[in-house]
Length: 157
Image (cartoon, rainbow, N blue to C red; front, side, top):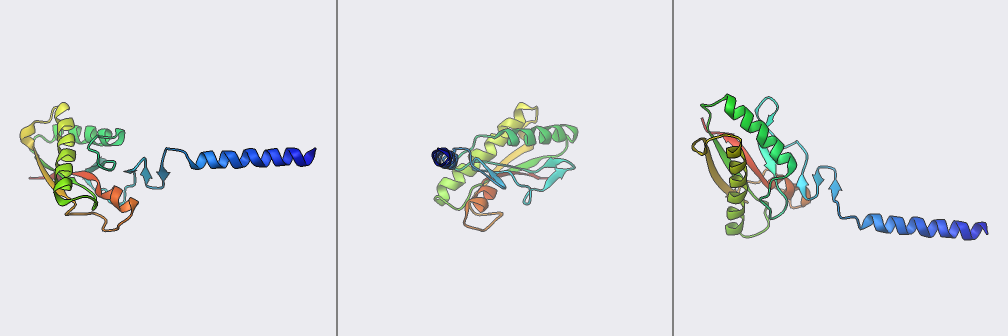
């Protein structure tokens, strides 16, 4: 009887382990759901105001974290009305040069559009796409790729 109970407990544990391995939510240290969440490549426009936001593979949709960063940038830009910025769009190394230039532009424009909804004039924001030409991490692995899928706000003056 005890052997049967142990066998059933083992089978249930094995099934749970197999199901948990199939979970769809990817969480790995500095990557969550294909988006970089670390901070080792992040710089700051001002104290507490990060200069970059990150994107999922082949996406230009802003994440919740990206929107929060851009809200802080908008608040800082409203207080510093003489400052203009360049939004640089970047992609990882995969894909053609042309595809990644277009993707980088969509990412930078997504950030620009969001800043404009918070009252920042389009006259103060320029968009420039580097595609895959300026990686922040030259590695060829998921972590490096996630660091390179970004839009960076750079002070222009």
